[in-house]
Image 1 (cartoon, rainbow, N blue to C red):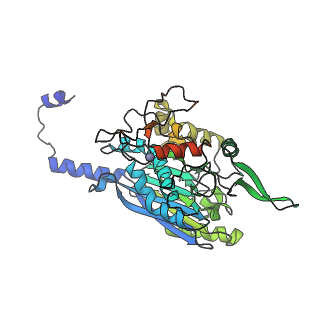
Image 2: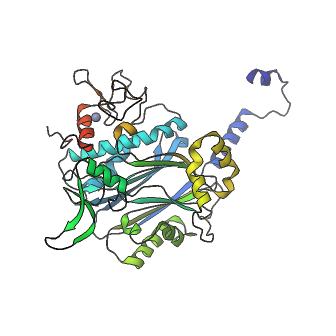
Image 3: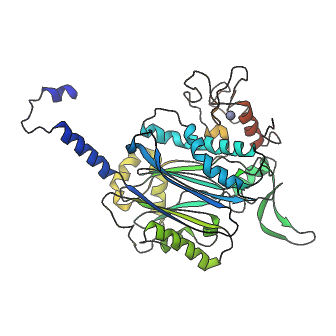
Length: 432
Ligand SMILES: [Zn+2]
C-alpha cells in the first residue's frame, strides 16, 4: 500500500504536516467523549466511602492516555476495610497490568488485573489483623469502554439515551444468589437465618460463622475465607450516544429499582442527578442505612446537554438479547454498527466465577517479570527460586486443558489463601 502511494505524483494542493497533525488531534478530540460526574451521600453509620479520580494516565505524562476511576466501598463492622480499599485497590489493580501495553491490550488485561488487585487488597488488609469488611464496586472508564468489578451488593447500572437500563454488576447477597449459596456451602460455610432460641427464623440469609449476608467482600477476616474477594467483572463499550452510570450502595437499591433510580434523575446534570437519586431513596424508605450515589455521564463530543429524558422504556426481550450477544465477534460487530442509533451497549467481557484458576487464565506470558523471575499473579512479588512457585492450576480437578506446571504462578501465601477460599484450609492468613 505504502509503495503505491509513493509512486503517485505529488499533488500541488498537498496538506502540510502541521495541518495534518492538527487535524489528527482535532479528530481524536472529537471522537472522545467527556466524562462528567457528581456524588451525593447521607450517612447513618459512617461506613460508606467512595473514590472519584479522573486524572489517571495509562502512560504517565501522556494526557491522551487518561482514564477515570470511580468506586463505592460500603463497609460493615467498622470502616477500616472500606478506607483501606479506597486508598489501595487502584494501585493494586494497576500493579497487576504488564507494562508497555497498547490501549487495546491494556483494556483486555484489565479483567484479570482487577481480580488480582481485589484479592491482593483483601490479603493485605487481613494481614493487618483488623476486623471489618467492605463491598467494593470499582468502575474504570476509558473513553467509550467501561469496566466494572464488584464484590458485595453495591450495584452499578447503565442508562443509555434510548432509556434502556441494564445492571452491570451481580448482587453477591446470599438471599438473591443461589449459585453463591451452593458455593459457600460446598466450601464449608453454613447458610441460614438468625434463629432466636425457641422463636422463628428472622432476617436475611446469612453465612455462618460470622453471620454476614454477603457472599463476597474485601476484609472480614473473622468470617470464613469462603466469603471471597474475587469480583464479578463486566466490560462494555458504549455506542457513540454515550450513557449514564449510576453507582450506589445498598441504601439506594433497597429503596429503588434500577429503572426507578435511572428514571428519577433523567435530564439532570450529574451532580444534581446524584442528589436526586439519594433524595428519592430517602423519600421512599427513610434513612435506614448509609446511602451513597455516584453518577457518571459519558457524554458524546459537542453535546453540552445532559442525556435527554425519553419516555420510560423497559428493556425488551429483543434488546436484552442484543445486549447479551454483542460479544460474539465478527457478525456481532457488524450488527453493532448497524444498530448504533439504538444506543445498544456492546458487551466485551463478563465473568463472575469465584475460582482463581478460572479467573487468572492460562496466559503463557503472564507471571514472568522483566527480571526474568516469575512473579505471583496476585501479589506481584518476585518468586525467589528457593521459595518455589505453585501453578494456579495445580491440584484443580476440573482443569482439563491446563497443566499444573503452566503459569500463572502463585507465591506460597497466595496459594494458601486460594486453598482457604475453596475450603481446603481453615485460613489463608499466616501471621509472621
Ligand atoms: Zn502472592
